[in-house]
Amino acid sequence: MSRADIHPTPPSELPEGWRLEGRRALVTGGTRGIGRAIVEQLLGFGCRVFLVARNQSELDERVGEWQARGYPVDGFAADLGREADRRRLVDWLAGQVEALEILVNNAGSNLRKPFLDYRLEEYEALMRLNLTAAFRLCQLTFPLLKNAGSASVVNIASVAGLTHLPTGAPYAISKAGLIQLTRNLAVEWAEHGIRVNCIAPWYIRTPLTEGVLSQPEYRSRVLARTPLGRIGRPEEVAGLAVFLCLPIAGYISGQTIAVDGGFLCKGM
Ligand SMILES: NC(=O)c1ccc[n+]([C@@H]2O[C@H](COP(=O)([O-])OP(=O)(O)OC[C@H]3O[C@@H](n4cnc5c(N)ncnc54)[C@H](OP(=O)(O)O)[C@@H]3O)[C@@H](O)[C@H]2O)c1
Image (tube, rainbow, N blue to C red):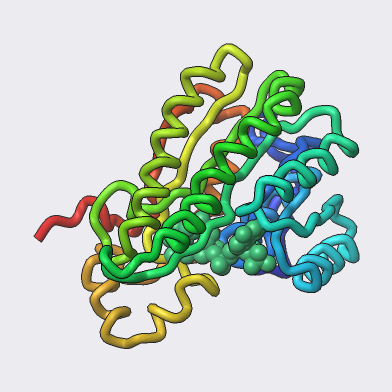
C-alpha cells in the first residue's frame, strides 16, 4: 500500500469484524517509521488517532498532511522518557476523549555498544523510553481503556527480546520486559475487556535502522539470516498491529508475534 492510498477498501464495505470506524487510538512515536505506518493504517480504517513524538515541527507537518486529507488526527509533543510528559500527554488525551479503544506503545530507541561500555545513564535512558514509558502509559490510560468496554493494547517489541542479536543488551532487555509485560497484563486486564498483544519485528526499513542497513557488510549479514531474503517494510508491521485491534482478533491476547521474514525459524 502506498502512502498516497491509505483507503484500500472503504471501511463500510468490510465485514463487521474487520471494521474499526470511530475507534480512538493513541500511537506513540507516530511521526516516522513503524509508528507512522500504524497511524496511516488506523486512519485508513476510520479510527480517530492521537499521536505523540518529541519533535514539534515534524509532528505538525505530519498531522497537517493527514488533516488536510480529512483524517481525524491530533498530535502532542512529549518526551516519553519523562514522567511529567507522560502525565501531560494523558491529561491532554483525557480532555478530548472519555474512552480509548487502542493504545500502541511503539516509541523506542537504541544505542549499540558492547555490554561493558554502557554507562548507567545510557542504560537507564533506554529502559525509561523502551519499557517504563509503555508500563506507565498502560497505567495512566487504564481508566480510558476500561471505559471503552473492549480495548486493545499493542506493544512493539523486537526479535531482540526473544533471542540474542548484536543490538546491545539494554535494548534486548527492555524488549524482553515488554514481552513479559504483555503476558502479565493480558491476564490481569482480561476481566476489563482489554486485550494486550505484542509484535516482535526483525529488520524493518525505517530511520532507526538506516544507519546499520547502509553498511553493505552488515546488510548482507542480515539478509543471509532472513529466509524471505529482504528487509521488512513498516506497513508489514502496521498491518499486524491493526489486525490485533480488530473485533475479529477478539480471542487473541497475551501473544507476541514476530514479523521477521522467517528469521526466528532459521537455524544453521
Ligand atoms: N526498525 C526496525 O527494524 C525495528 C525492529 C524491531 C523493533 N523495532 C521497534 O519499533 C519501534 C519503532 O521503530 P522505528 O524503526 O519506526 O523507529 P524510528 O524510525 O526511529 O521512529 C521512532 C519514533 O518514535 C519517536 N520517539 C523516539 N523517542 C521518543 C521519545 N523519547 N518520546 C516520544 N517519542 C519518541 C520518534 O519521534 P521523535 O524523534 O520526534 O521523538 C519517532 O516518531 C521501536 O520501539 C523499535 O525498537 C524497530
